[in-house]
Length: 520
Ligand code: XMP
Image (cartoon, protein in one colour):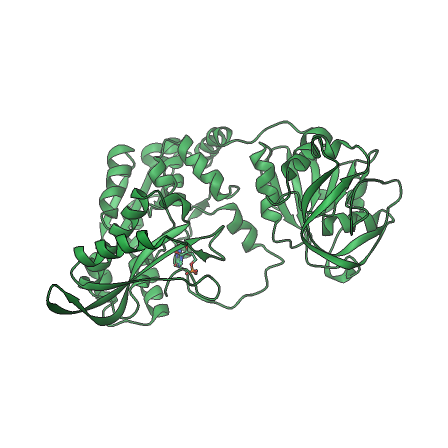
Protein backbone atom coordinates (compact mmCIF):
# COMPACT_ATOMS: atom_id res chain seq x y z
CA UNK A 1 0.00 0.00 0.00
CA UNK A 2 1.12 3.55 -0.61
CA UNK A 3 -0.68 5.35 2.15
CA UNK A 4 1.96 7.93 2.90
CA UNK A 5 -0.34 10.93 2.86
CA UNK A 6 -1.06 11.47 6.50
CA UNK A 7 -4.59 12.68 5.91
CA UNK A 8 -7.93 11.30 6.99
CA UNK A 9 -9.20 9.41 4.01
CA UNK A 10 -11.66 7.06 2.39
CA UNK A 11 -9.91 3.92 1.24
CA UNK A 12 -11.15 2.33 -1.97
CA UNK A 13 -10.40 -1.35 -2.33
CA UNK A 14 -10.11 -2.03 -6.04
CA UNK A 15 -11.43 -5.31 -7.40
CA UNK A 16 -10.71 -4.34 -10.99
CA UNK A 17 -13.66 -2.15 -11.88
CA UNK A 18 -13.22 0.23 -14.77
CA UNK A 19 -14.85 2.86 -12.56
CA UNK A 20 -12.55 2.66 -9.52
CA UNK A 21 -10.71 5.86 -10.40
CA UNK A 22 -14.04 7.56 -10.89
CA UNK A 23 -15.05 6.69 -7.31
CA UNK A 24 -11.84 8.28 -6.04
CA UNK A 25 -12.42 11.37 -8.14
CA UNK A 26 -16.00 11.78 -6.95
CA UNK A 27 -14.85 11.66 -3.32
CA UNK A 28 -12.10 14.17 -3.94
CA UNK A 29 -14.56 16.46 -5.73
CA UNK A 30 -16.45 16.45 -2.44
CA UNK A 31 -13.32 17.72 -0.69
CA UNK A 32 -12.14 14.48 0.90
CA UNK A 33 -8.88 12.66 0.31
CA UNK A 34 -9.29 9.15 -1.10
CA UNK A 35 -6.82 6.48 -2.01
CA UNK A 36 -7.08 3.35 -4.09
CA UNK A 37 -5.49 0.09 -3.08
CA UNK A 38 -5.68 -3.21 -4.87
CA UNK A 39 -7.51 -6.05 -3.14
CA UNK A 40 -4.29 -8.01 -3.51
CA UNK A 41 -2.18 -5.47 -1.67
CA UNK A 42 -4.34 -4.44 1.22
CA UNK A 43 -3.20 -5.69 4.62
CA UNK A 44 -5.19 -5.36 7.82
CA UNK A 45 -2.22 -3.84 9.64
CA UNK A 46 -2.09 -0.98 7.11
CA UNK A 47 -5.57 0.16 8.02
CA UNK A 48 -4.88 2.85 10.55
CA UNK A 49 -6.75 5.64 12.29
CA UNK A 50 -6.67 7.87 9.21
CA UNK A 51 -9.05 5.56 7.32
CA UNK A 52 -12.54 6.78 8.11
CA UNK A 53 -14.41 4.68 5.61
CA UNK A 54 -13.86 1.87 3.10
CA UNK A 55 -15.43 1.46 -0.31
CA UNK A 56 -15.32 -1.91 -2.04
CA UNK A 57 -15.33 -1.32 -5.79
CA UNK A 58 -17.04 -3.25 -8.53
CA UNK A 59 -15.14 -5.79 -10.58
CA UNK A 60 -15.42 -8.40 -13.30
CA UNK A 61 -15.30 -11.44 -10.97
CA UNK A 62 -17.87 -13.68 -9.42
CA UNK A 63 -17.88 -13.82 -5.62
CA UNK A 64 -17.57 -17.62 -5.67
CA UNK A 65 -14.26 -17.45 -7.59
CA UNK A 66 -12.57 -17.25 -4.21
CA UNK A 67 -9.08 -18.02 -5.52
CA UNK A 68 -9.20 -15.01 -7.83
CA UNK A 69 -9.63 -12.30 -5.26
CA UNK A 70 -8.47 -11.55 -1.75
CA UNK A 71 -10.38 -9.94 1.03
CA UNK A 72 -9.44 -10.39 4.64
CA UNK A 73 -12.65 -10.81 6.64
CA UNK A 74 -10.96 -9.19 9.63
CA UNK A 75 -11.41 -5.84 7.89
CA UNK A 76 -15.11 -6.13 8.71
CA UNK A 77 -14.30 -6.13 12.43
CA UNK A 78 -12.35 -2.88 12.48
CA UNK A 79 -15.41 -0.80 13.19
CA UNK A 80 -14.99 1.23 10.01
CA UNK A 81 -18.03 2.04 7.82
CA UNK A 82 -18.05 0.10 4.54
CA UNK A 83 -19.87 0.78 1.28
CA UNK A 84 -19.88 -2.01 -1.30
CA UNK A 85 -20.56 -1.07 -4.90
CA UNK A 86 -21.76 -3.73 -7.40
CA UNK A 87 -19.23 -6.58 -6.92
CA UNK A 88 -18.28 -4.93 -3.60
CA UNK A 89 -21.97 -5.11 -2.59
CA UNK A 90 -21.99 -8.80 -3.43
CA UNK A 91 -18.83 -9.57 -1.44
CA UNK A 92 -20.09 -7.61 1.54
CA UNK A 93 -23.37 -9.53 1.36
CA UNK A 94 -21.70 -12.91 1.06
CA UNK A 95 -19.28 -12.26 3.91
CA UNK A 96 -22.20 -11.31 6.13
CA UNK A 97 -24.15 -14.48 5.47
CA UNK A 98 -26.10 -13.43 2.39
CA UNK A 99 -26.20 -15.30 -0.89
CA UNK A 100 -25.25 -14.24 -4.42
CA UNK A 101 -26.37 -15.96 -7.60
CA UNK A 102 -26.46 -15.38 -11.30
CA UNK A 103 -29.47 -13.24 -12.20
CA UNK A 104 -32.07 -14.50 -14.62
CA UNK A 105 -32.06 -11.06 -16.17
CA UNK A 106 -28.70 -9.43 -16.41
CA UNK A 107 -28.95 -5.69 -15.92
CA UNK A 108 -26.76 -3.47 -18.07
CA UNK A 109 -27.72 0.15 -18.39
CA UNK A 110 -30.42 2.25 -16.82
CA UNK A 111 -32.89 0.78 -14.32
CA UNK A 112 -35.37 2.18 -11.85
CA UNK A 113 -34.90 1.51 -8.17
CA UNK A 114 -37.80 1.93 -5.77
CA UNK A 115 -37.54 3.25 -2.24
CA UNK A 116 -38.50 0.67 0.40
CA UNK A 117 -37.11 2.14 3.61
CA UNK A 118 -35.33 5.27 4.75
CA UNK A 119 -31.59 5.30 5.31
CA UNK A 120 -28.85 7.82 5.94
CA UNK A 121 -27.28 6.58 2.72
CA UNK A 122 -30.27 7.69 0.67
CA UNK A 123 -30.90 10.95 2.52
CA UNK A 124 -32.12 13.41 -0.16
CA UNK A 125 -31.26 10.88 -2.86
CA UNK A 126 -34.78 10.04 -3.97
CA UNK A 127 -35.75 13.69 -3.49
CA UNK A 128 -39.55 13.62 -3.58
CA UNK A 129 -39.88 10.63 -5.82
CA UNK A 130 -40.52 6.99 -5.07
CA UNK A 131 -37.96 5.80 -7.57
CA UNK A 132 -34.67 6.88 -9.12
CA UNK A 133 -32.88 6.05 -12.36
CA UNK A 134 -29.61 4.31 -11.72
CA UNK A 135 -26.95 2.68 -13.86
CA UNK A 136 -26.49 -1.04 -13.45
CA UNK A 137 -23.85 -3.35 -14.87
CA UNK A 138 -24.09 -6.83 -13.40
CA UNK A 139 -24.79 -10.45 -14.17
CA UNK A 140 -24.87 -11.69 -10.54
CA UNK A 141 -27.06 -10.37 -7.77
CA UNK A 142 -27.64 -10.74 -4.08
CA UNK A 143 -30.39 -13.35 -3.73
CA UNK A 144 -30.57 -13.67 0.05
CA UNK A 145 -30.33 -10.73 2.39
CA UNK A 146 -27.34 -10.97 4.75
CA UNK A 147 -27.93 -11.27 8.48
CA UNK A 148 -29.05 -8.09 10.25
CA UNK A 149 -29.39 -6.15 6.99
CA UNK A 150 -32.45 -4.24 5.80
CA UNK A 151 -33.60 -3.50 2.24
CA UNK A 152 -33.53 0.18 1.40
CA UNK A 153 -34.39 -0.02 -2.30
CA UNK A 154 -35.19 -2.61 -4.97
CA UNK A 155 -35.28 -2.68 -8.74
CA UNK A 156 -37.47 -4.96 -10.86
CA UNK A 157 -34.57 -7.38 -11.16
CA UNK A 158 -32.57 -6.76 -7.99
CA UNK A 159 -34.59 -7.11 -4.86
CA UNK A 160 -31.61 -6.00 -2.80
CA UNK A 161 -30.46 -3.00 -4.84
CA UNK A 162 -29.58 -1.00 -1.71
CA UNK A 163 -29.13 -2.65 1.68
CA UNK A 164 -27.85 -1.57 5.07
CA UNK A 165 -26.74 -2.81 8.44
CA UNK A 166 -27.16 0.42 10.35
CA UNK A 167 -25.49 -0.78 13.55
CA UNK A 168 -22.30 -1.93 11.86
CA UNK A 169 -22.48 0.87 9.25
CA UNK A 170 -22.30 -1.54 6.32
CA UNK A 171 -24.00 -0.47 3.10
CA UNK A 172 -24.31 -2.13 -0.28
CA UNK A 173 -25.53 -0.79 -3.61
CA UNK A 174 -25.94 -2.99 -6.67
CA UNK A 175 -25.70 -0.05 -9.08
CA UNK A 176 -22.90 2.45 -9.76
CA UNK A 177 -23.47 5.76 -7.95
CA UNK A 178 -20.12 7.08 -9.25
CA UNK A 179 -21.13 7.28 -12.93
CA UNK A 180 -23.01 10.30 -14.19
CA UNK A 181 -25.80 8.15 -15.65
CA UNK A 182 -26.99 7.45 -12.10
CA UNK A 183 -29.19 10.43 -11.30
CA UNK A 184 -28.06 12.11 -8.10
CA UNK A 185 -25.49 9.32 -7.55
CA UNK A 186 -23.04 11.71 -5.96
CA UNK A 187 -25.53 12.11 -3.11
CA UNK A 188 -25.07 8.44 -2.17
CA UNK A 189 -21.31 8.94 -2.00
CA UNK A 190 -21.58 12.21 -0.11
CA UNK A 191 -24.04 10.68 2.39
CA UNK A 192 -21.68 7.79 2.96
CA UNK A 193 -18.66 9.99 3.60
CA UNK A 194 -20.28 12.89 5.48
CA UNK A 195 -23.27 11.35 7.29
CA UNK A 196 -21.98 7.86 7.90
CA UNK A 197 -18.15 8.11 8.03
CA UNK A 198 -18.41 11.66 9.43
CA UNK A 199 -15.17 12.73 7.85
CA UNK A 200 -14.34 16.44 7.61
CA UNK A 201 -13.34 18.20 4.40
CA UNK A 202 -9.58 18.12 4.00
CA UNK A 203 -8.82 18.19 0.31
CA UNK A 204 -8.66 21.13 -2.08
CA UNK A 205 -6.11 22.37 -4.59
CA UNK A 206 -5.49 25.33 -2.27
CA UNK A 207 -4.63 23.12 0.75
CA UNK A 208 -2.56 20.96 -1.53
CA UNK A 209 -0.57 23.88 -2.84
CA UNK A 210 0.66 24.89 0.60
CA UNK A 211 1.30 21.32 1.74
CA UNK A 212 3.15 20.35 -1.41
CA UNK A 213 5.32 23.45 -1.30
CA UNK A 214 6.23 22.78 2.33
CA UNK A 215 6.98 19.12 1.63
CA UNK A 216 9.26 20.04 -1.25
CA UNK A 217 11.12 22.58 0.87
CA UNK A 218 11.68 19.95 3.56
CA UNK A 219 12.73 17.26 1.13
CA UNK A 220 15.14 19.39 -0.91
CA UNK A 221 16.84 21.39 1.83
CA UNK A 222 19.76 23.22 0.27
CA UNK A 223 20.23 20.81 -2.67
CA UNK A 224 19.56 21.42 -6.35
CA UNK A 225 16.76 19.97 -8.43
CA UNK A 226 16.52 19.48 -12.18
CA UNK A 227 13.32 19.17 -14.15
CA UNK A 228 12.63 18.49 -17.82
CA UNK A 229 10.11 21.07 -18.94
CA UNK A 230 8.01 20.34 -22.03
CA UNK A 231 5.48 23.15 -21.76
CA UNK A 232 2.71 20.57 -21.25
CA UNK A 233 0.34 20.74 -18.28
CA UNK A 234 2.06 18.31 -15.91
CA UNK A 235 5.66 19.44 -16.28
CA UNK A 236 4.54 23.09 -16.18
CA UNK A 237 2.73 22.58 -12.87
CA UNK A 238 5.68 20.67 -11.41
CA UNK A 239 8.08 23.42 -12.48
CA UNK A 240 5.97 26.20 -11.02
CA UNK A 241 5.40 24.29 -7.78
CA UNK A 242 9.13 23.80 -7.35
CA UNK A 243 9.77 27.36 -8.34
CA UNK A 244 7.51 28.55 -5.53
CA UNK A 245 9.13 26.12 -3.10
CA UNK A 246 12.83 26.41 -3.86
CA UNK A 247 13.26 29.26 -6.39
CA UNK A 248 16.71 29.33 -7.92
CA UNK A 249 17.67 25.89 -6.65
CA UNK A 250 15.43 24.59 -9.44
CA UNK A 251 16.94 24.17 -12.91
CA UNK A 252 14.47 23.49 -15.73
CA UNK A 253 15.80 22.14 -18.99
CA UNK A 254 13.73 22.75 -22.08
CA UNK A 255 14.88 21.00 -25.26
CA UNK A 256 13.76 22.33 -28.60
CA UNK A 257 13.75 19.22 -30.77
CA UNK A 258 12.60 21.22 -33.79
CA UNK A 259 9.50 19.03 -33.67
CA UNK A 260 7.43 21.33 -31.49
CA UNK A 261 4.31 23.25 -32.41
CA UNK A 262 4.73 26.61 -34.14
CA UNK A 263 6.23 29.25 -31.79
CA UNK A 264 6.20 26.80 -28.89
CA UNK A 265 9.79 27.56 -27.88
CA UNK A 266 9.10 31.28 -27.72
CA UNK A 267 5.98 30.76 -25.66
CA UNK A 268 7.80 28.50 -23.19
CA UNK A 269 10.69 30.94 -22.81
CA UNK A 270 8.29 33.86 -22.44
CA UNK A 271 6.14 32.19 -19.84
CA UNK A 272 8.68 30.39 -17.74
CA UNK A 273 11.81 32.46 -18.03
CA UNK A 274 10.44 35.96 -18.51
CA UNK A 275 7.12 35.92 -16.66
CA UNK A 276 7.57 33.31 -13.96
CA UNK A 277 11.33 33.93 -13.58
CA UNK A 278 12.13 30.25 -13.48
CA UNK A 279 15.75 29.16 -13.97
CA UNK A 280 15.35 27.87 -17.51
CA UNK A 281 18.06 26.35 -19.64
CA UNK A 282 16.97 26.50 -23.25
CA UNK A 283 18.65 23.95 -25.51
CA UNK A 284 18.16 24.42 -29.22
CA UNK A 285 18.86 21.04 -30.77
CA UNK A 286 16.76 21.37 -33.91
CA UNK A 287 19.60 20.64 -36.29
CA UNK A 288 20.88 17.63 -34.35
CA UNK A 289 17.46 15.98 -34.15
CA UNK A 290 16.84 16.53 -37.85
CA UNK A 291 20.23 14.99 -38.63
CA UNK A 292 19.55 11.97 -36.43
CA UNK A 293 16.19 11.46 -38.14
CA UNK A 294 17.59 11.76 -41.63
CA UNK A 295 16.43 8.82 -43.76
CA UNK A 296 14.47 7.25 -40.92
CA UNK A 297 10.87 6.37 -41.69
CA UNK A 298 10.08 3.53 -39.29
CA UNK A 299 7.79 4.83 -36.50
CA UNK A 300 9.42 2.87 -33.69
CA UNK A 301 12.92 3.88 -34.82
CA UNK A 302 11.86 7.52 -34.87
CA UNK A 303 10.49 7.24 -31.34
CA UNK A 304 13.63 5.54 -30.04
CA UNK A 305 16.02 7.98 -31.70
CA UNK A 306 14.16 10.98 -30.34
CA UNK A 307 13.70 9.52 -26.84
CA UNK A 308 17.34 8.43 -26.52
CA UNK A 309 18.82 11.63 -27.86
CA UNK A 310 16.56 13.68 -25.64
CA UNK A 311 17.89 11.85 -22.60
CA UNK A 312 21.47 12.33 -23.76
CA UNK A 313 21.02 16.08 -24.10
CA UNK A 314 19.22 16.29 -20.81
CA UNK A 315 21.96 14.38 -19.03
CA UNK A 316 24.76 16.43 -20.50
CA UNK A 317 23.14 19.72 -19.41
CA UNK A 318 22.18 18.32 -16.03
CA UNK A 319 25.82 17.35 -15.44
CA UNK A 320 26.93 20.92 -16.03
CA UNK A 321 24.86 22.03 -13.06
CA UNK A 322 26.95 20.75 -10.19
CA UNK A 323 25.62 19.06 -7.02
CA UNK A 324 22.22 18.09 -8.32
CA UNK A 325 20.52 15.67 -5.96
CA UNK A 326 16.94 15.47 -7.21
CA UNK A 327 15.00 15.01 -10.41
CA UNK A 328 11.44 16.37 -10.44
CA UNK A 329 8.84 14.47 -12.48
CA UNK A 330 5.18 14.99 -13.27
CA UNK A 331 3.99 11.48 -12.39
CA UNK A 332 0.22 11.54 -11.78
CA UNK A 333 -1.96 9.34 -9.59
CA UNK A 334 -3.32 7.25 -12.49
CA UNK A 335 0.32 6.48 -13.50
CA UNK A 336 1.02 5.36 -9.96
CA UNK A 337 -2.06 3.15 -9.81
CA UNK A 338 -1.47 1.70 -13.24
CA UNK A 339 2.17 0.90 -12.56
CA UNK A 340 1.02 -1.16 -9.59
CA UNK A 341 -2.15 -2.40 -11.22
CA UNK A 342 -3.14 -5.94 -10.50
CA UNK A 343 -6.00 -6.00 -12.87
CA UNK A 344 -4.26 -4.75 -16.02
CA UNK A 345 -2.85 -7.74 -17.85
CA UNK A 346 0.48 -7.49 -19.64
CA UNK A 347 -0.72 -5.78 -22.77
CA UNK A 348 1.06 -5.90 -26.08
CA UNK A 349 3.25 -2.94 -26.85
CA UNK A 350 1.66 -0.62 -29.37
CA UNK A 351 4.10 2.30 -29.20
CA UNK A 352 7.29 3.14 -27.30
CA UNK A 353 6.32 6.21 -25.38
CA UNK A 354 8.73 9.01 -24.93
CA UNK A 355 7.74 11.22 -22.06
CA UNK A 356 9.77 13.97 -20.45
CA UNK A 357 8.58 12.48 -17.17
CA UNK A 358 10.47 9.23 -17.67
CA UNK A 359 14.01 10.54 -17.23
CA UNK A 360 16.81 9.31 -16.67
CA UNK A 361 17.42 6.27 -14.49
CA UNK A 362 21.19 6.20 -15.04
CA UNK A 363 21.82 9.44 -13.21
CA UNK A 364 20.87 7.94 -9.85
CA UNK A 365 19.04 11.04 -8.73
CA UNK A 366 16.38 10.97 -6.07
CA UNK A 367 12.90 11.54 -7.44
CA UNK A 368 10.52 14.30 -6.50
CA UNK A 369 7.04 13.52 -7.75
CA UNK A 370 4.79 16.12 -6.15
CA UNK A 371 1.77 15.29 -8.32
CA UNK A 372 1.76 11.58 -7.67
CA UNK A 373 -1.43 11.68 -5.61
CA UNK A 374 -3.35 13.91 -8.01
CA UNK A 375 -5.68 13.30 -10.91
CA UNK A 376 -5.32 15.39 -14.05
CA UNK A 377 -8.26 17.64 -13.22
CA UNK A 378 -6.75 18.27 -9.79
CA UNK A 379 -3.39 19.11 -11.39
CA UNK A 380 -5.19 21.66 -13.55
CA UNK A 381 -6.84 23.26 -10.52
CA UNK A 382 -3.52 23.30 -8.70
CA UNK A 383 -1.92 24.97 -11.72
CA UNK A 384 -4.49 27.77 -11.57
CA UNK A 385 -3.80 28.17 -7.84
CA UNK A 386 -0.14 28.56 -8.78
CA UNK A 387 -1.01 31.41 -11.14
CA UNK A 388 -0.35 29.49 -14.33
CA UNK A 389 -2.47 30.85 -17.15
CA UNK A 390 -5.61 29.09 -18.34
CA UNK A 391 -3.99 28.68 -21.75
CA UNK A 392 -1.25 26.48 -20.25
CA UNK A 393 -3.56 24.60 -17.91
CA UNK A 394 -6.13 23.62 -20.50
CA UNK A 395 -3.82 22.70 -23.36
CA UNK A 396 -4.33 19.59 -25.39
CA UNK A 397 -1.78 16.82 -24.77
CA UNK A 398 1.25 16.81 -27.04
CA UNK A 399 3.43 13.73 -27.48
CA UNK A 400 7.13 13.69 -26.56
CA UNK A 401 8.28 12.78 -30.11
CA UNK A 402 6.25 15.76 -31.34
CA UNK A 403 5.62 16.39 -35.00
CA UNK A 404 7.88 13.48 -36.00
CA UNK A 405 5.00 11.07 -35.40
CA UNK A 406 2.63 13.33 -37.32
CA UNK A 407 4.75 13.12 -40.45
CA UNK A 408 4.55 9.46 -41.44
CA UNK A 409 7.59 8.41 -43.46
CA UNK A 410 10.66 10.56 -43.96
CA UNK A 411 11.02 13.81 -42.09
CA UNK A 412 12.44 16.91 -43.77
CA UNK A 413 12.81 20.50 -42.70
CA UNK A 414 10.38 21.55 -45.42
CA UNK A 415 7.72 19.09 -44.24
CA UNK A 416 8.09 20.23 -40.62
CA UNK A 417 7.61 23.83 -41.68
CA UNK A 418 4.50 23.04 -43.71
CA UNK A 419 3.04 21.02 -40.87
CA UNK A 420 3.74 23.66 -38.22
CA UNK A 421 1.73 26.16 -40.27
CA UNK A 422 -1.16 23.78 -40.96
CA UNK A 423 -1.39 22.80 -37.30
CA UNK A 424 -1.28 26.46 -36.28
CA UNK A 425 -4.23 27.37 -38.55
CA UNK A 426 -6.24 24.36 -37.39
CA UNK A 427 -5.76 25.01 -33.67
CA UNK A 428 -6.40 28.72 -34.14
CA UNK A 429 -9.64 27.97 -35.97
CA UNK A 430 -10.72 25.62 -33.17
CA UNK A 431 -10.12 28.37 -30.65
CA UNK A 432 -11.80 31.06 -32.76
CA UNK A 433 -14.91 28.91 -33.27
CA UNK A 434 -15.14 27.84 -29.62
CA UNK A 435 -14.30 24.18 -30.24
CA UNK A 436 -10.90 23.92 -28.56
CA UNK A 437 -12.12 23.14 -25.04
CA UNK A 438 -14.78 20.72 -26.24
CA UNK A 439 -12.10 18.62 -27.86
CA UNK A 440 -9.65 16.43 -25.92
CA UNK A 441 -6.90 16.60 -28.51
CA UNK A 442 -6.56 17.95 -32.03
CA UNK A 443 -3.75 18.28 -34.50
CA UNK A 444 -2.78 18.41 -38.15
CA UNK A 445 -0.57 15.76 -39.75
CA UNK A 446 1.22 15.71 -43.09
CA UNK A 447 0.70 12.54 -45.10
CA UNK A 448 3.60 11.28 -47.23
CA UNK A 449 1.59 11.30 -50.43
CA UNK A 450 1.34 13.97 -53.06
CA UNK A 451 -1.79 14.34 -55.13
CA UNK A 452 -2.82 16.46 -58.09
CA UNK A 453 -4.87 19.60 -57.67
CA UNK A 454 -5.75 22.69 -59.60
CA UNK A 455 -5.26 26.21 -58.32
CA UNK A 456 -6.08 29.11 -60.57
CA UNK A 457 -5.42 27.55 -63.94
CA UNK A 458 -2.39 25.67 -62.79
CA UNK A 459 -1.83 22.08 -61.94
CA UNK A 460 -0.48 21.46 -58.43
CA UNK A 461 1.16 18.33 -57.04
CA UNK A 462 1.37 18.64 -53.28
CA UNK A 463 0.93 16.92 -49.94
CA UNK A 464 -2.26 15.86 -48.17
CA UNK A 465 -2.92 17.37 -44.76
CA UNK A 466 -4.85 15.18 -42.34
CA UNK A 467 -6.80 16.77 -39.51
CA UNK A 468 -7.62 14.83 -36.36
CA UNK A 469 -9.83 15.99 -33.49
CA UNK A 470 -11.05 13.61 -30.84
CA UNK A 471 -13.08 13.49 -27.68
CA UNK A 472 -11.89 11.22 -24.91
CA UNK A 473 -11.82 10.77 -21.13
CA UNK A 474 -8.24 9.66 -20.75
CA UNK A 475 -6.75 8.99 -24.19
CA UNK A 476 -7.29 5.24 -23.85
CA UNK A 477 -10.35 5.29 -26.09
CA UNK A 478 -11.47 8.11 -28.34
CA UNK A 479 -14.12 9.24 -30.78
CA UNK A 480 -13.67 11.67 -33.63
CA UNK A 481 -15.28 15.08 -33.13
CA UNK A 482 -18.35 15.62 -35.29
CA UNK A 483 -17.73 19.00 -36.95
CA UNK A 484 -20.31 20.63 -39.16
CA UNK A 485 -19.46 20.66 -42.86
CA UNK A 486 -19.13 24.46 -42.85
CA UNK A 487 -16.30 24.41 -40.30
CA UNK A 488 -14.43 21.69 -42.18
CA UNK A 489 -14.86 23.70 -45.34
CA UNK A 490 -13.54 26.88 -43.70
CA UNK A 491 -10.42 25.23 -42.30
CA UNK A 492 -9.75 23.26 -45.47
CA UNK A 493 -9.87 26.48 -47.51
CA UNK A 494 -7.66 28.30 -45.04
CA UNK A 495 -4.98 25.63 -45.10
CA UNK A 496 -4.93 25.07 -48.85
CA UNK A 497 -5.00 28.79 -49.63
CA UNK A 498 -2.41 29.83 -47.05
CA UNK A 499 0.18 27.09 -47.19
CA UNK A 500 2.32 26.23 -50.14
CA UNK A 501 2.83 22.49 -50.18
CA UNK A 502 -0.71 21.34 -49.32
CA UNK A 503 -3.48 21.05 -51.90
CA UNK A 504 -5.82 18.60 -50.17
CA UNK A 505 -7.23 18.30 -46.65
CA UNK A 506 -8.83 15.18 -45.18
CA UNK A 507 -10.55 14.68 -41.82
CA UNK A 508 -9.86 11.49 -39.86
CA UNK A 509 -13.14 9.85 -38.80
CA UNK A 510 -11.77 6.75 -37.09
CA UNK A 511 -12.18 6.13 -33.40
CA UNK A 512 -9.68 4.54 -31.04
CA UNK A 513 -9.72 1.57 -31.18
CA UNK A 514 -9.22 0.48 -33.94
CA UNK A 515 -7.00 3.50 -34.72
CA UNK A 516 -4.73 5.21 -32.24
CA UNK A 517 -4.84 8.93 -31.62
CA UNK A 518 -1.44 9.65 -33.18
CA UNK A 519 -0.61 8.33 -36.64
CA UNK A 520 2.59 6.59 -35.54
P1 XMP B 1 -2.06 7.02 -29.01
O1 XMP B 1 -1.50 7.46 -30.31
O2 XMP B 1 -1.28 5.90 -28.37
O3 XMP B 1 -1.94 8.25 -28.03
O4 XMP B 1 -3.53 6.67 -29.11
C1 XMP B 1 -2.56 8.34 -26.77
C2 XMP B 1 -2.14 9.66 -26.14
O5 XMP B 1 -0.75 9.62 -25.83
C3 XMP B 1 -0.06 10.67 -26.50
N1 XMP B 1 1.24 10.11 -26.90
C4 XMP B 1 2.39 10.37 -26.24
N2 XMP B 1 2.65 11.16 -25.18
N3 XMP B 1 4.92 10.57 -25.31
C5 XMP B 1 3.93 11.26 -24.73
O6 XMP B 1 4.20 12.01 -23.76
C6 XMP B 1 4.74 9.76 -26.38
O7 XMP B 1 5.67 9.13 -26.88
C7 XMP B 1 3.40 9.67 -26.87
N4 XMP B 1 2.84 8.97 -27.90
C8 XMP B 1 1.51 9.28 -27.89
C9 XMP B 1 -0.94 11.03 -27.68
O8 XMP B 1 -0.67 12.35 -28.13
C10 XMP B 1 -2.30 10.86 -27.06
O9 XMP B 1 -2.64 11.97 -26.26
